[in-house]
Image (cartoon, rainbow, N blue to C red; front, side, top):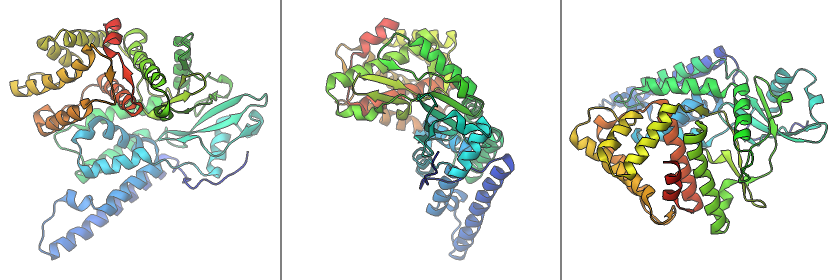
Length: 439
């Protein structure tokens, strides 16, 4: 095990008190900046709003950097807010959240050694022939390292940041209070449901035993489907704060964009079909569509599936509600479509006729994609632009502002992420025929 410095390294504050102090220091810095800015504005005869004083370039940078350094729940909340309500957020808040999606600090070597010792004991070096201290990936809950067992097997080891699990609730409460105080969050949107969902998701993702079980379940469900590779769980090196699995050589899925068209089409078809199987057959879905969770093997054309921390059970009722909604959309039954959207919690009941029409027009655009008859070309169409314009219209009609229930949110996030990936790869897929098999 060689200590190689990483320019991205920054120690994770461990423990609830240390993390609360960091958040308190951030709040104090913001308050100080607001007070100074307000005093200067008053001298100039101005009466600025609080949000104008908070959302200075310096404060935006300070807030994004501190949340990124803390990692854990505060960083994850920012990412969730961006994904679930991005179209309704101010440009300033979206700028902060975009930085949280892109930034990834890593633990310095000394802290990494302590985490390994806490996970495996003082003799942790005997479990590995080699261990690369430079992480393969870093995220809000933990980071991933490549290692080799004494008998020569290549592993990927996911290590949880110290103190993150025990500070989830306090982190979220502190971050939410800061967001509310700053005026960054629209008053018309109830932050409570997203906060509750972030809390539940973080506790699940911090449970590495749960993630290991989900990894094994997906491996069993996809056994025999040679389009996919699921890493094998190494139970002997897996514990509450460490998840060990086979290392599967592969390349970023984005490299497929340069592959022949038939390879791109096959890969995207496989991923979209897998999503439908998760919804209608497995009733078990890996709900995080981050591109990094999909990898590609050019030599075999296989897709390596990673990161099962966000795996969710889908109730039979929700699965059948989506099936009914798809049938209604394909049959152009608008009343049934509205009933289906209400059933899954996508819209509020009792919408005015004008708002109902807005929702139906947006739904029709989506269902047109599923009706065929030709394969859908993700690169050669303006579907995303038209949907974005319609979404901006909805964002301007505050009666339509609504956060759906968790299962709907996660499924919509998964579908949206796969659409973006298919567009990035420029694939053509016969979506109508695929959907017909499940509906």
